[in-house]
Length: 140
Image (tube, rainbow, N blue to C red; front, side, top):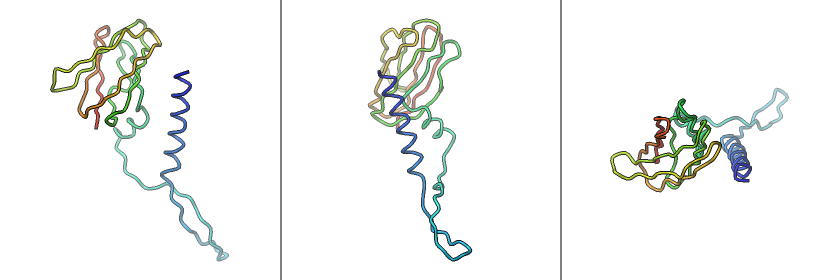
């Protein structure tokens, strides 16, 4: 049920984002009539911002191959779902860089999920001791 709701949320988010970036401009045809044309808004987006928009909310743990994506940006208060796509159950450790604060997940079964809300701005390293791989979450 969670996956279904998350899927619906992501579809709605894509639809809203697609509509929000359009503007309407009047155009005059050769016959002298005026029509309105919808064109995409001009925005500058870095590759990091694009990756974050696509992946916000979910990080996959893929065993020895690491996390997908390996780095993402989110907002303060955003919740991330970690999905275990590896061959065995694992735990994850979340550490805020520059502090001694760490959080360890429950055991995440294969195809299982663990969710964590990031309530403070900063850079966080997430790692799986089982596979020795890391990811980075930047909270702004």
